[in-house]
Length: 280
Image 1 (cartoon, rainbow, N blue to C red):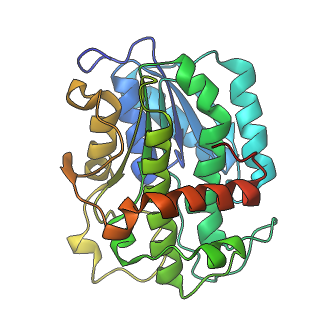
Image 2 (image 1 turned 90 degrees about the vertical axis):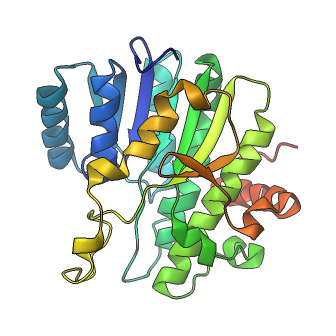
């Protein structure tokens, strides 16, 4: 990728109908990219797509629907993308949730774990052939500073048990960081880079708690998308892989996130959960 132009590049963003995801699509489209907006709700997705085209003047945008809490729908989404595109240059796993009510998905997984970790793990692996075909290409996982409070318990993940609301969130975001680093190791030398980031504390729909006290201290979704866009387009990071970023700067993630042995075990456990063959 040369400079800030993404003309001729195909970029996919999950959770794209609002917040950081939508601002990411706007940024990518403004740089000339063809964008694939993955949204759960058709009405909101269509409205977001129309707004993106209006604001950027780039009509090369497609809306694809997917409920990322369902592994069947994630596989259907991947099949749809594989049938329509020959290469993928930027994959942004942006969608995330905090399941305040707890509960499980249609597949029996804890909801926060399913959306924040299992879905991007499965989707990325299913689309990895397209990403390799788009080399030099970039995978970007939107994690959170909450991962510093997380702990990966392999038995807990294998049984899809979860703790308190924010514990489940932190654990899922740590798992996403560890997935980032393990995938970076597995794609080393392929022209595919894999990085993750903390977008900042952003005032988005994910936080459904009353936030009238904290909202003044939150940043805008546009500001929250800046690091994602930096990782998607900047020539400064085109060869960097397996890193964690905040405010467009590389930062050290939690100590546990660098445990390579645990990351390999986590990979194998996750493959079993989502129905992927275990590859060494």
